[in-house]
Image 1: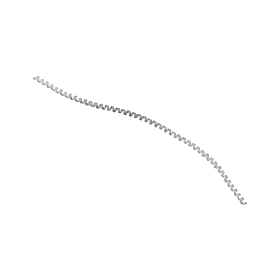
Image 2: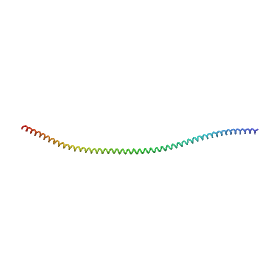
Image 3: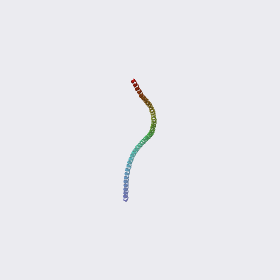
Length: 166
């Protein structure tokens, strides 16, 4: 009987181990199912990440194109700015030349006017002297004529008296 008890005990132990093995197998199966589910979710996440990575790469390409266009626009803007500076410098130079030309014209005008006024003044002085001489001569003639007129009147009176007395 000890052999049967030992055998029963062994069988119980084996049965317990089998049940534990079955429980372990069920747990293993459950873990495997969970792992499959996790793998499936991981694959979904990987697909999502791949899609996001593709969109990121597309966005990155678009950004590269935009940056390229922006750089081209910057180069164009820099060229325009340089042309503007050159034009501004040309305008400053022209303004300086114009200012110098105006100054030169003023100087020439004043010096020319000065000479013109001197010439006019000289001409007026000469004409004034000539007029004085002519006026003096005319005054002498007038004085002479006045003296003669007085003398003639006196002679005419004398002649009238003589005629009247006759």
